[in-house]
Length: 535
Image (tube, rainbow, N blue to C red; front, side, top):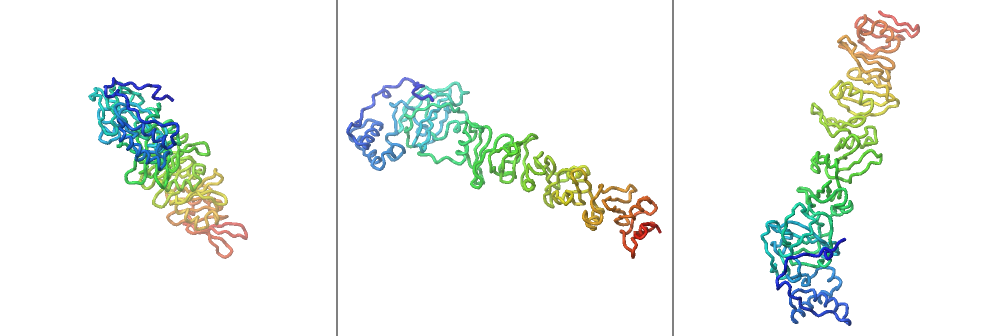
């Protein structure tokens, strides 16, 4: 790392008063104690012409500090500030707070032009202290002079020099007007500054009464940023320094490629890339996702990067970057998340065309959120439901997740149920046919599983469902089941479009016989003979 002595400061010619030799002060002797050596060394750093009286006063101040803790005096700013001051004759530029009304920032007519650092600074709690030069803008109106302050009486507008790590787009510049002292790295203080560093530890204890003392400890956002590599990490340099979020207990900072958010309940976490874009699309921490509760992570399945939030997740994978939040997120997680039956999201939250529901599409299904709850459907049941018009079709909205029976999977809907067996056989029962089937015990009852979807008979009057052990017919004369030998005889006679018409009763017992009545006749089955007769 280069030092300032390597780069050699350049300055305009000094006045006679500026080149006057500094008076000597007593130095440490070979037999002095450690405290006496510290007193002599500290006294030598006191500015001004030391008369015997002033020297004794200054050494008394320093000595009182050393009597308490000599090392503490050397390492930390205390009450003995005299040795931190400076005059025009020391060649350094005054601090900005001295000439800028107490403000530790570049005054009007100047700009942040370059910087160096001093290590192990007591003023920064042992961390590096950064000195930022404010050079005069062009055209330059200031002139070389002493600041005139009682402590920080150093030069202003005298040193024609520029390190140039900041605002490199500004080519024309005047002398250094003043110096900003800060514990904040310059590339965070001003995003135009680069991280190219120079060091001069001679400035570690330069001071002025208007400068702050030891900075507060680093914030949780500072710690997170440092752990991610600071400006050299993937977030890049600071664009907006850390600040409070109005109306909340949170804070945030903006970087070139991302953000860090913090609040007491969640901690400090970064968000970047397209995940940050989607978070902002959802109104950031003010939206349904809230604050992040993790950094951007790699999923164990190797297919995605994702971030967790207070009320949801955002996934970035091969088909895009999508958010899942609120009740839909909870339902997705309850069903195994991205490694479950639904897989990864393929959309953000959408609103149905009639405005009744919100939903999210996934690789193998969908989750709906509406006035009756939130439910998922997936696989071949989802495909069949979509093929039958989805929520706008005959079945309406799901009223359960996809469930399993001893032989199949099924989903309940507002107006029916769809079954899937072994992922290949899919059939739905809906309307009055579904209600009749359920009244007879459903798939575990008289009729068993459906073999086809409920369909129209084709005569503009009725609908039917075909099951493993019988049929159900629905018309304006009622909804009835037909099964066994009577069903076979009924179908041989043309079924509902034949001579008998629609059934008006279920199959019923009459002594040892089984009978069923229709619009235009009756069928009777005699178990003793195995015959079905019509009357």
